[in-house]
Length: 366
Length: 266
Image (cartoon, rainbow over the protein chains, first blue to last red):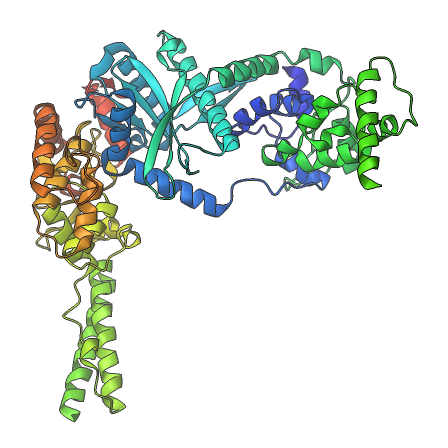
């Protein structure tokens, strides 16, 4: 852990939130991100200092819309949510008890959540059905991250369900797959945190269902509709990724001994580290850039710039990169295609495909 | 004509003095009310001086204040409610002009007014009390209600919702707005719509809501009675209406070493 602290240097650690943890699972192969997150480094500050600030974060309109929709779902003692849970999970009519954890004040929310969940797990169905504004915690590489799921629902089967309220529309039973995947990853983080909490309290962690309730607006109206999403796969990725973060030794071993990503903040908190030095240090940790990074990672513009300079095939997206397996750069692929370059061992197959593609292209053009 | 002008000038002076008094007493609601009247009087004065006859529409049938509109809405509902619902009810049945945003500072204004002159008004818009006797987030009640109706146990949000639905269904609505409100509420009560898409039958909604209420009533009444007893025993006048500050409640609980609803006080 000391090595990780040395990586961060004098800059204070930055707590993780659910989105950041979920983004980890989105690109598990990226060593740069794993190291930066493992050391709790403020990636946004690093990117800004390097001159590649990411226009990152949600748009204020999206946030307003999200909040509005959430308050609609939760209005009048979660009336809409109760209807959906009754339809979807067969929640009995008597199960309506509602606890707003936030009533205790911000500083006690986590302890109050623990007490309520503990009671629910011990006493069974009599303890309560809906817990609004709970605050969970998850240990990420030695740092505690606090997480706020939308609602935790507890129902007759004696299982907890995470409820995730999102404002993207489900039109005719179909939603944007990317948005659903992101929501599922985020919900998986909450499932993991709640399971950790139950385990800590001495209960069976499997009381938390791997099926999360996703609530979205239906069609073109604001009427909410709920569906069950299985997050087992996301849970597995996340667990593997979090385990890997605590055992970053292999990645650390690949770095030079004296490397640090420290920004060396001055008196006024502004970073004083020379930009060239920092970017050299960062290049020591290999990134696995993909265009999807633009929507999940603060470092995206830095990595994209790096990938462009190298002419890397990563720029073309994951699918192309996977098809070009073994061909690292765009120049190499072009060389193989027009035959200027002889395929190395193992590249014969892809070289043949590329040449065929080039021939077809020429035929089309002439 | 000049008589009318003199009269208006006198009225304007009075209103200005009234606004100043209200500001000094930190009574925001009263000051806003007086300012609105002042503006109307000034507009009429302008119109008279420049020789225009004020169009009859300019003289609205005495403005009903935000406070009064909320009071009307709550009286109709008869249970603790969120601003959103109060606004919808006021809009559907009283031709209300309030918006949810206007209700955010209302409780604070009421508390300030109560502190400066306790029991000086016939009613106050007060808070609902949680199981920690702190104010519940985003719920309004009337000070004239018994404490049992103003506290919220775990089942109370649902019970209050059903009570409000019954109240809305029992009310004769003038136009489509009342129907729309009822549709929205009925959708979330099992058996209230009967699968029909049109406006639900109010009788049926009342029946369905009562059926669900019967399931929750007993436990909720018990919880509320217990909370009301504690609130009456532990809270002073101000805190009984506007809720105890969270930290002091916790301190009290720790000294009592009590367990509340089985949850240990942290």
